[in-house]
Image 1 (cartoon, chains in turn blue, yellow):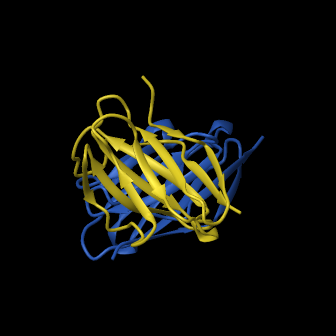
Image 2 (tube, rainbow over the protein chains, first blue to last red):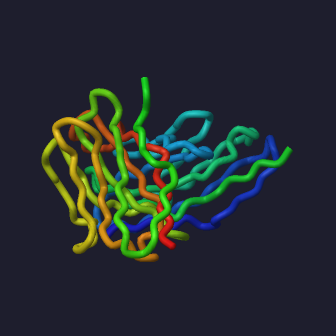
Length: 112
Length: 116
């Protein structure tokens, strides 16, 4: 069965600093991996996804993630945090159909 | 272009009452999915529906929970005789059709159910 672990329920960074949100997955077959973001009072939005091909995936708002099979990781990064990045971020794994398995989420706090 | 609409945003019920959660998919979307997020846990898949059909309900509790997506109107997630353990955020998502990679999956803002 697939599962996702997000390390750190809260991550705090200063504006302009590097953002690193960690995600490790467990899957018996090559997974599809996703990062979603949830802004306050809004639904989840897809940030980026990995299916096949290039392991470095670029998403919206300057975020990117790298699929590392050897480490079973799919960490989300952004070189320079902006105040508007403050939100909850969810990593998810799927075998390719509609049943996504989500992590517990990481709340990103950005201070001036 | 309205997104996935869920109502109510917050629902309070006493133990034993019924809860009805509504989800209107995005215009043109014929597939609806329900997820539940219990406190301190990730979202968990519950059920996948197309118009008038339940495609996959492997994540639905065996009792008290049901879902429908009629030909006309929103999808309804119904919880009978609610218990405190049903308190959670319930998210609906929709897509235009069967997609292998979920890239067209759009989520609503969720309904927070609180059972007193």
